[in-house]
Amino acid sequence: GSFPAAADEAGKAAELQPGNAGYQDLAYRTSARGHYNMAQAIKDDTVPVKRRRVDRALQTIPTRRAADIGLAMLQLRTGDYDGCVERMNLAVELGPNKAQTHYWFAVALRVMKRYPAAAVEGEKAAKLQPRNAMYQYEFAKTLQEVERFPEAADAAGKAAALQPGNAVY
Image 1 (tube, rainbow, N blue to C red):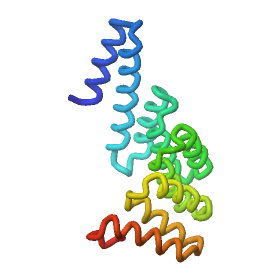
Image 2: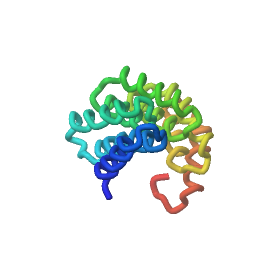
Image 3: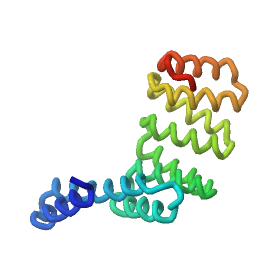
Image 4: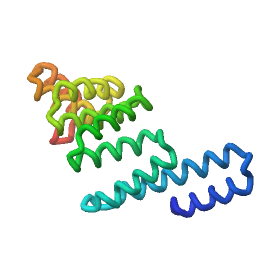
């Protein structure tokens, strides 16, 4: 099935049993996930449409970390750097031990050329998931920008060791 259909069915179950917290939660999560996934599927040249979908997901579940990250990346693409940082800080509050959140925050900060802050977030991602080559590689690139070359070489070496056949690392 599809997310819109799943959201409709979950909504019907929630209406039929309004006292059932499980059905209420399922309807809530399914609707938000559907909107968020639809936003992710929209082509890059449709930022306003994507923004509406992410906003709808956030209205359904205002504290959905993945939707916060998605909105932050949209804000980054449109030049709203302060909004991006604010939204990423919220995502970090929601998932302080989620490597993915720190990774995307590091990427955003590096794009903004805020290299020292990007290195801090990159290090958190790399430490939380030391076997993730992509996180190690992102950390290595940021360390180069802050001229921490020995550490950058170490992180790049870790990325290469994790994926020896990958020419990028």
